[in-house]
Figure 1 (tube, one colour):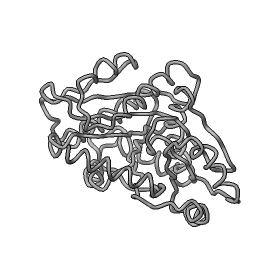
Figure 2 (figure 1 turned 180 degrees about the vertical axis):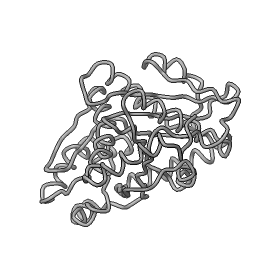
Figure 3 (figure 1 turned 90 degrees about the vertical axis):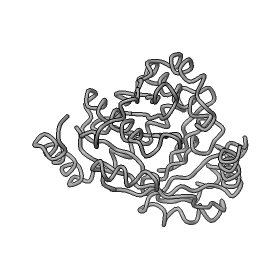
Length: 295
């Protein structure tokens, strides 16, 4: 595997520096983030994508706020009509949703946040590193990573997976596979990965390639398999596969737990996303988390 400090890796580092110098890096990252969710909305019955100024409202219909984002990633300009647009898109049908802002857009979005009584639940750093990348250490010898070729294969493979994983994640994954198969879009590639340790379900990851950007999402590992290199391996496999589709930059969003892992792999933060939800959605999320911890 190529070493992170080798000449090939440095060449890709210049690619990131060039994009940053032109002011296009964040634009390319945000495009990847948007296309991932818009792709799902295109494939799920009842899904839709609306625009209100520079606000993008993605309604997948999956009954969880994480899968129905309202993106304020560009300078929003006049926000006067935003609250009503959000209400029309989600609240009439009681669909849970979340608002995604950046450090640049959150000051302008404050009137919307205040009118809708939103609460910030967490912040996620957007992180990048050049491709190719080294594995970050020896991979678990008993880890098998399978890439799903179709929604049918995904459904058959996950029948025995435990409920600790988001129940709705499989619908999200299946819709992305269908998007790539059925629609003409800017998605160059989609990869859904399942990791099993000694035959036991352990971890997932998702890859979406757009332009030079290989977005790695939803790296989730069951608690019993954490701190064993499983999440690192799932990230590495997804990112490396994007090279074959023309990707040269790996991009992800890190949880508080995952950030040290990604920094060891050479990722650095270039953006911060703030996630906002209504008090009702926040309470439902906390209740669900409590239920998962205390079945």
